[in-house]
Image 1 (cartoon, helix red, strand yellow):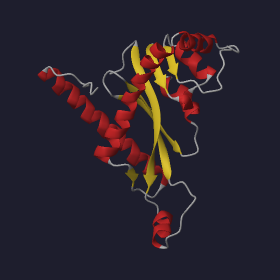
Image 2 (cartoon, rainbow, N blue to C red):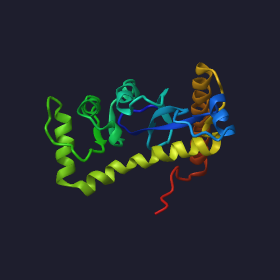
Image 3 (tube, rainbow, N blue to C red):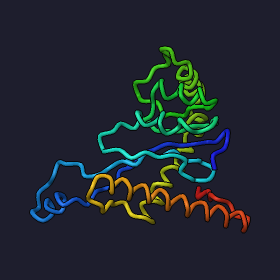
Length: 201
C-alpha cells in the first residue's frame, strides 16, 4: 500500500501495562509514581489510514528520536505532519531529503535559523508568511489521532502480557489486526462507492 508522494502523519501513544505491581498498588491504595505503559510510535498514510511503519519503546523514549526510523523505508513523500514532539531541524531535513514538505508544529521558542538544515528555514518562513494556510496543512495530523482512537476503542488500550517480549508482540498484533480491518474496509468502500473519511464539520 506504499506509494510515491504519500501524505503521512506521525504520532505516539501509550498503552498501559497490567503488571502485578500495579495491581498491588491498587489493592493497598498506594499511589505509585512508576509509569506502567509502553509507547507505540506510528506513521500512517493519511489518505487510507493504514499504518505504514511502527516502533515500540518504553515510556521514556523521545518521539523525535523515532522520526527518522519511521520514515526511513518510505518512498518519496508529499506532506509530512507531526506535533511539536517531532519538531527539529534534523527531522525537517529528513522529510525534504525524501522530496516531502514538513509540517512539524513549531515550538514557541523556535527561530528560522537554518543551522545547516535549509528545509527548517523554508518551513519556518512558510509558516510565518501564512500561518493559517500552514496550520490548515498541518491539521492532516488529526487522522493519526483517529487511528489511535480506533485501535484503543476496538482492540483495547491495555497490554495484558507480563513478559517484556510478549508485551511488544501483543501490541504489534494490535497494529496488524487494525491494518487488516482497515484494508477490508477500504475494499468494501471501493465496492460501494463510499468515501473513506467523512467531514464532520
